Image (tube, rainbow over all chains, first blue to last red; front, top):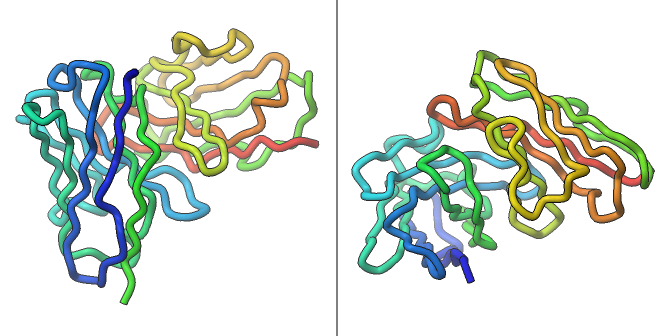
Length: 119
Length: 106
């Protein structure tokens, strides 16, 4: 079935780096754009980044621009989020989501992976 | 673009008709989606392009609006509908979500 599965979350100290992965299956990954969206505990959704289907176009939310990098490997059906210079306020559940377009919205979501930034 | 939902919390009963409003700080044309999220779960897409119901979503859900004001209506609440609802604009980067509306049982 169509699904995306995140991995790579964990506990990391402020200022350190972490890379999240998102494995796609059940659809032709290279044909779809993909997003990362995060949610701090008890808070709302925050859009993080999007990458085009071929990987040439990338856009970021203001709070992560310059620190996070979205990328993909279509040969491995995998989306990535490289998170550098992490801050305590980056603590959240990070969701990977498929974009059915490129449209700008998300039609298939993973269950999320938890990132905790703490000393 | 700032997205503001109202109300933040809504108490209603099974069978009620409810409406959630989403306002954008500038026009997003019709590039607006609605999501439902239940506790501990990922969001799920309900509506795209302001009023296009996602396949498999019950017809009691409907969306309307354009420009800066949008609504999500549930015509007759069912027990499974008690959840948090988010709007999201995808007219321009950075994309943004509303703060959410928690729909709870009265």
